Length: 329
Image (tube, rainbow, N blue to C red; front, top):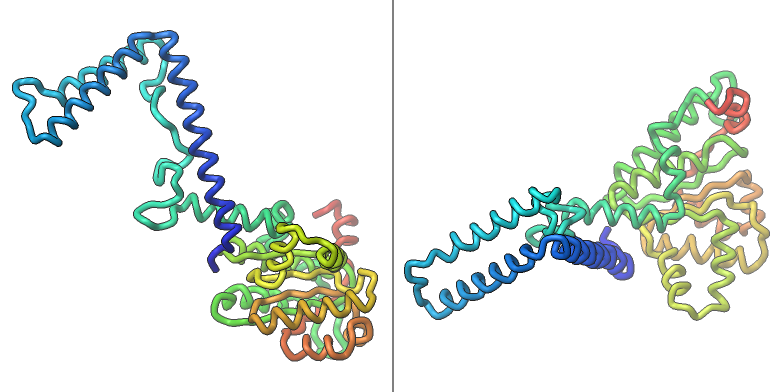
């Protein structure tokens, strides 16, 4: 997916800031060198004068006679290089420097996005996802099936907790693999501490790395934001509200922990339904049972989710408690 206009503008501003910063730094280096070595400023003026003379000759199609302009410019450049080195300066001390030498901090090479631009896009997507730090730890590389016991068996499926988690992990990887070509939603449900949030973070990390826009909210934070939007006319709030509906993946965590009322229920249905209509994927997670879910958010909302979401159940012993008992390992 391409960035939204505001996201794209934000990345471009980063490049403009880089260019201005490096130009200021170059100007400061030039002032420092010229103060210590006045001859450098004279060389610069002489090179500029010769370059201007060369340009005039080329434009007028005249000849420089016996005088070799290019050789004179090279000679002055060599004098400058020797002068800098002999006084402890690097030979490129006066040159403009770049964070990226490939695109020279423009973000583009031959009309195509430079690798640094794509990294800047991903960095922005991480920042706006609300998950920047946590995804360094919570990703597929750190998802461990050994937290799920083989002695716990689901009465409904006959599968152990580990078998169920293994299937959920496969579904999550498949969701990522097919994300760009296949519209799908996921609802993760089960008791507290069985890895629902962790698994949604694994998916988020992979998709952000691929350049997709992902936003994560707890249910409490999302509904609080929607409540604020009702009484706000700010451009930032309008943009955030719009992004909830058109980001590539919305992750809504901990459904059922917020204070549910008619506003929350109606906004939840609106969010779910609108994203289905736009074919923008959503991941929900909840500690509620399916019966409780239908009771809290209405049969209408529950029916919409059942019809359009892959339901993934996780169960087992609380992983947070297991980690504490093993010293966090």
